[in-house]
Image (cartoon, rainbow, N blue to C red):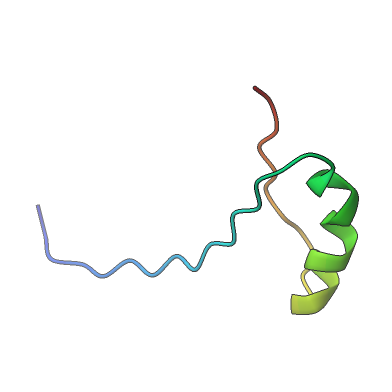
Length: 40
């Protein structure tokens, strides 16, 4: 394998009803697209 660097800042939110705040989290960073994994 070749040498490389990988930087992945990640915010993980846990708890009931957290999905209701997704818009707020996205707006904080001015993002245009996000990846959301949801399930149990």
